[in-house]
Length: 406
Image (cartoon, rainbow, N blue to C red; front, side):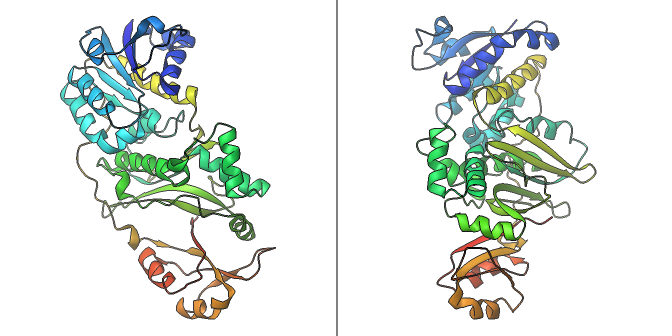
């Protein structure tokens, strides 16, 4: 029996205990000795919980117990999650986490510490919830040069955009509905401003390159400025609005370009039909081509299931390090303003002539049923820097959304 400890007994932490207990038979099918939760660290007591006798309040109880071989960090936030994770790794205990904020900020450092102490630092659950994506990147794609990773990485925003598209709801109404259904937090800032998917694409970019890409380095735009007219225009272009995390790894220069923003996704693209709270990640290898991973990107049990999958891998590899390919070095980031895109633009109809003149007359006008008083158009392909300079010339510019190519 492999003894483990859970740090933080909230939604994911309690889910980890539930997955291990309910699926112990399945776990023993491939890992015969089984897994047992010996300790649960939390500031609170849980007298009505079946795990009440396992709750402890001192991290040293866990660190000093040689029987504990794997620690599940499901606390969230940077502190004290970082300090506790480091203590566990330095004691030779592997750490599995769902904490995307910590992985993004300090994951490379913790991965190096794990390697130094012959244990592992794994974080499958930090990106995509229950979708297995990090392990395939590390194993199934080990022979590939991954050129592109893009995905719908946040179920809350995808739910909101789906409601706006299919039911014509306003952003505010769709957000309230998401909160009422438990898909959005009372304070939804991390989701709707794009911070959550931005951290996830930063983690994916770090794994693709082997160098650290930080959340603060990634241009990030959320969905708060999207309105129902955007979906009318999108429909006329046979496209739909999706919030995407996008990573391009240039094979020649080895530079990586990363962004989180709303995109107009074309009909027929694999991400076009991903709706509601579902997530999907599209990976392009230079030899294998496109592969897509789809499923529940959040939720108690899907996320906990991903944590337990890491626990089993750590248990199989007791006494040695599982190299995830992440190092404590910085990735070679390309200038995101140098990337070329086509932009969909909305502005007041009075500026139509100026827009056509400034963009060289090479604009494609876009019309939408029920939308009046605007001039909407597609720009020629241009760099982000070029577009920003031209857009600054207009006082009535209401919106710009990038077109996803292909």
